[in-house]
Amino acid sequence: MGQNVRVSTGLSPTLRDSLSVSITVGAYGVAFGAAAVANGFSVLQACLLSLLTFSGASQFAVVGVIGAGGSSISAIATASLLGTRNALYGVIMAPRLHVKGFKRVVAAQITIDESTGVALGQEQRGSDAVKKGFWYTGFGVFIFWNLFTLAGALGAQAMGDVRSFGLDSAVPAAFLGLVWPRLTSQGERLLAITCAVFAVAVTPILPAGLPIIATAFIAIAVGLRR
Amino acid sequence: MTTFWIATLGTSAIAFALKYSGHSVPERWLSHPKIQRINALIPIALLSALVSVQTFTDKTSLVIDQRIVGLAVAITALLLKAPFPIVVLSAAISSALVYNWL
Image (cartoon, rainbow over all chains, first blue to last red; front, side, top):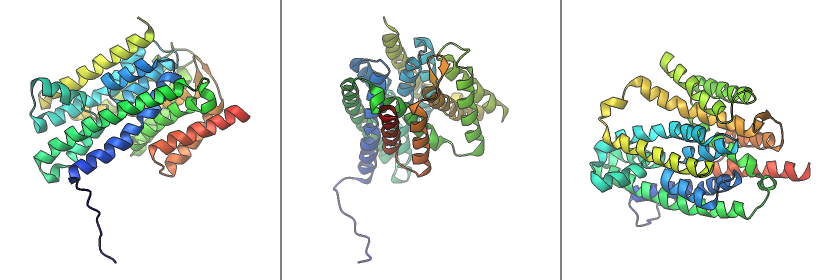
């Protein structure tokens, strides 16, 4: 008693980190698959978004903007602005991975919040663990995210009226869950509330989809001033 | 091509281009502090706008319906530090209850 008993799983600490993140994050794919179908996307389109776009916030944004009646252009623009952080993750990961050609294409596709986060979390374990953390988590999330997307899309398709299953509220709740951890300062909370109020206030006067992307300019203005 | 296909494929193409460009440009290009700061603020703005638009609007009109209950429950769950799946599930269940029985 009182000893720190550890059950040996036979897995390296890096692989354990990667697997736990992959399974929990991948499970959110159910919410995405269901949200996509609830907003009029086909099961195939939902699955293609998870395979090809493979970036949670961007994918939710596409179905959210289209679901709100926005044009494909405003949906793509909103999703792409959310995807710019993956470019910065690429900048961070490139010198740590040293990959070229096809391997760089694969690395780019799995460059997301989680793979970058787990990789950087391995720095004390050495540069080899950083690489492994990135590849294990990237592939792990990719596999689970896509499987769960299919499950969610098929589930929503079987439902009929998605409102009677609360899917119309699952989507904004998912957005809220994505933004919540980012609100670490008073200024960020103020920005969030300002943008939320602004987007609703201009909805009756702007074409659908534009109220959302217009808030990016508020963020840029705030970022330039500070 | 329908709106849905254009959105699906267009988003995918740009998403990959952004990821690949990050792996291919010199680090100093994107390391300016203002760019880093704006990059952190843009998701906050867009995601917050998506929360409110998805809750309080229907096409171009403002509406109050069962979704406000879902949002209130989601906020409560987050304040109680519930994990993401619980946040989404509790919002969906509460909204469904209001929609079906009120």
